[in-house]
Image (cartoon, rainbow, N blue to C red):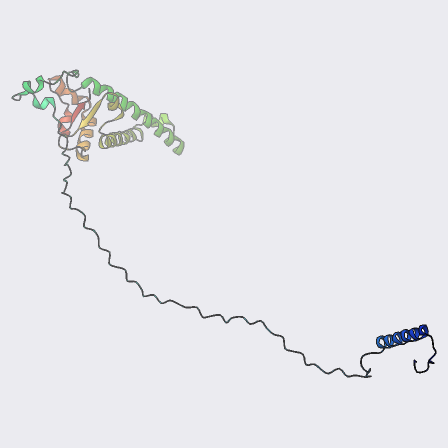
Length: 255
């Protein structure tokens, strides 16, 4: 552009021409792309990469410790100190001493002198108390007999009056049966009938703590068969009854 200008062109036109030229070049740089534009440019195929897996450490095999089986030592029992053998005391049967057995013996007065006086028992072989005890026992037996007769009357339809009129049929055998069982049971189990308990009496066998059944049977037969004749020795001053003598038993008093 400067070539077209004349030499006599003013300076201000030259400056304007240079600025226009510079402006045009700057605009050309801004609009023109840096390289030629290619049409239908194919994009190269990029093969996808395999996913990268995180690397984990390989688990190690468990280490099994092999221990030797411990053999238990044999248990040795400690020897206990030997204790001296302690002998258990031997219980000897109680020895019962009756004053009647000691009477008339030598030294009886000296033995009984230091013993305090006890209340004296009734005279004789406790005759009065044995009679009262017998009344109590037979009252109980009569009550049991009437209970049995009432049950028998209900069962058979026979009146109690008819049974009392002919006692050998039911009444007397039933009474003797209950009488025998009554004395046999109480003398065998406790050596006391209920009547004897109230009067503090006890039947004893001098040779045993349990009265044999044979002696009880002999005593019961003597009681029933001899009845009041059992008191004959008392009338002549003896200290026993016939049933005591026959059965080899004796009556003891707790008073």
